[in-house]
Amino acid sequence: MSKLRVQAFSVSIDGYAAGPGQDLPNPMGVGGMALHQWVLSTKTFQALHGDGAGGEGGVDDQFAARGFQNIGAWIMGRNMFGPIRGPWPDLEWQGWWGPNPPYHTQVFVLTHHPRPSLTMEGGTTFHFVTDGIHAALDRAREAAGDRDIRLGGGAATVRQYLREGLIDELHLAIAPVLLGAGEPLFAGLDLVKLGYTCTEHVASPKALHVVLARRRAG
Amino acid sequence: MSKLRVQAFSVSIDGYAAGPGQDLPNPMGVGGMALHQWVLSTKTFQALHGDGAGGEGGVDDQFAARGFQNIGAWIMGRNMFGPIRGPWPDLEWQGWWGPNPPYHTQVFVLTHHPRPSLTMEGGTTFHFVTDGIHAALDRAREAAGDRDIRLGGGAATVRQYLREGLIDELHLAIAPVLLGAGEPLFAGLDLVKLGYTCTEHVASPKALHVVLARRRAG
Image (cartoon, rainbow over all chains, first blue to last red; front, side, top):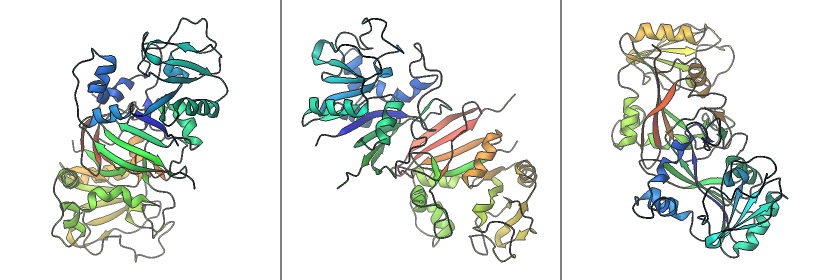
């Protein structure tokens, strides 16, 4: 069966996935961009968001690249799709990524507010799912076929799927930075009881990469 | 002025300094010994607790050794001194470490239950401080002179001193392990507001070492 995977999810030393005070100028919260320094200079990131050339290889890049391998569909929280809260005022907002988003699959956006599906260039279609995380996962599984499903952020979305034991594999990049407050990833979740263990770890100069995997029942 | 330093303090990926269910057979809690794997094989640890020979050098050993450099006094919580809770039934318990403990300084043990000071071989004297963390720090400063004071565990003790902004430097070893529950280090503490930043980080194959330091006021 295809896996539900979280990849390249950055957390601080003190366990925050975003800083305090998230808003449009600070979508990652105060100090939150420091979490992502490890990925910005990778070849993978530069190819997606930079000028398409350059960038560094190595451990960080291997983890960044892995996040796009064998992915047949995406699920993301609404805050990852955009900064708008509440009902959609109109259909103008089409994501952070311009006309050709870096997904190239069907993307299921969790929201309480219905909106028609949105087809972009490059094979990305955003679907807006209002009937919950299980429904989104069912639709993503159907779209992904044999390939895996990647679950994007934010922390609240990842925590919902963790709590239900639905995530098969979670790659965290622990960045050497303190945030002090913001969106905690682990608070109130007993990952051991939920069946997770650390199956892989390797450090770069910029982050400690750990992979948490869940034992499949029976 | 001499510094108050926490050294070689191990935490899990999910921020626990000890596992759940601490008791005499499991002083680190269930799974908690996995936090300390990085230190067990170091030269420093082997010289202190092993047969005195062997052990590995490298990054882990450098951090283990640093924890004993320029230390003029220790402070520790009672649970680090021993497993007994409540009033001392007698004076039989003399610590986990045998007749010659690895401190070789005055050691101030925080407890609610008075007990006469205890002089051991090798220059270690345990004093039992019943009037709080500030009193223990004052006495340790006097004992340490120009040298630094090392603050041992457990997590509750470290958290008390962190909350008051009294720790100058804190070396954490983030071990690639999940504990799921136990003694959280960061919960409810905003280390950024308390003035801490990450000033140093380096990984070994067994742990990510980070040093958190506090800006001194004025």
